[in-house]
Amino acid sequence: MNPTIGVFDSGFGGLTVLRALMAQIPQARFVFLGDTARLPYGSKSRRTIARYAAESAQFLVEKQGAQFLVIACNTASALALDAIQAAVPVPVLGVIEPGATAARAASKTGDVLVIATDATVHSHAYTAACQAQGLRAIEKACPLLVPLVEEGWTDHPVTAEVIRIYLAELLAEASAQGMTPDTLVLGCTHYPMLRPLLERAVPPGMRVIDSAKAAANTMVLTLRESLGTPPASLPEPPLLQCFATDSIEKFERLGSRFLGQSVGPVQLVDLGG
View 1 (cartoon, rainbow, N blue to C red):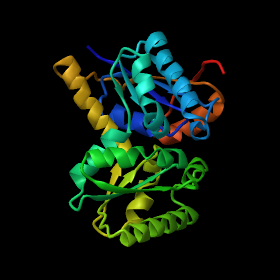
View 2 (view 1 turned 90 degrees about the horizontal axis):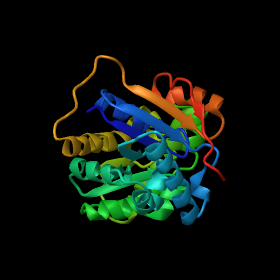
View 3 (view 1 turned 45 degrees about the horizontal axis):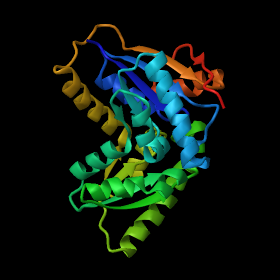
């Protein structure tokens, strides 16, 4: 059986997760939904985020036949994973626990740094997930990075300087707490677009964990457990259909940058208010 995997985000960043999934599972059919009409989720209440995310999940499962669901949105993973799992009868994977698990495998000191958006940091979801792995974590909100990525400044001196300042502040905080971090977790799906700049900015030897790739690796394991054996690869590229709740022209333009290839014609869908 060649599985249908639904991938959901409030915007475009989750396409980095889709990109990693397509590389790992080329035989699957992928359906991606960006709830662009209702972003940013980070400014909404937990109850509203849960409702939006559950509606998106139901669209992917009930209307598009998704057999597995990846929540490629750190805010929804942090604040609405339980609501999504209750809303759909298929396996649901978020991006936070895989990121923490990958950090545990990478870290030798047990101390990790996490950079993310304000909403994800305020949820403390990464701190909790890291603690469950026996790690100490310090989280830092980096609100300037998402607009810089969406502006296309992924290899720009201004972006490099912003990253340097954020990391200097984070490392100073870790030092003040007597921590010796050796791993940096990218807790926002936009941040893989900045990985080269981040790897140049971190101290020598520090590992950078891409939660998008970590989620893809976990989904491969989930598929193997559910299907028994890995589905046979097909010679053609993965099948992909993208949906957005607003601004499909912008989605096609920005989305192709995040995905590293054309997202194809994006279909507009109305999920309500």
